[in-house]
Image (tube, rainbow over all chains, first blue to last red; front, side):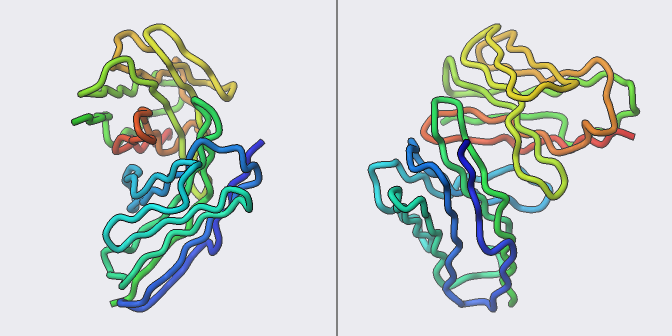
Length: 111
Length: 109
């Protein structure tokens, strides 16, 4: 069974710093990997989706990379802002209806 | 564009009472629909998914059931709630990646 791990569990950085969130998965046979953001008490907002054949995707200040063979993905956030404070979840899709989530990284950006 | 609606946003129910949470999707047809639960301090757990009207797959044996009476409607139900049913329930559909609803916070007291 696919296991997804996110490190660190929590991260606190001053505003303006660049940061990297890590996600690792045990089975490299994936369809795609998706990064989500969750604000307290809210649903999940999709940030980026990387297909298994892709190496990276970018959206604004966010860049996600995927190394399928090593079972790793990173989410890079440039010039962090207090509004980036949230929990970030990565999820890997391994089948038509199988989406496995990590337990998330709680990010706090200090003004 | 596709949107997903989920209600109610919060719910406080006594133990033993029934439950009905509703999810609807707009802007797409024959979507794959999902119910997830997020318990406090834990990850997201897939409860049910549906690939079409009347087709329900259960991932975890539990006190809950799901139904899909219409193409874009997915309902999560229980006849008698338990304390352990408390949590944050999320509906999702799969298009290009997964899109989640805003969630329902259920507290069973």
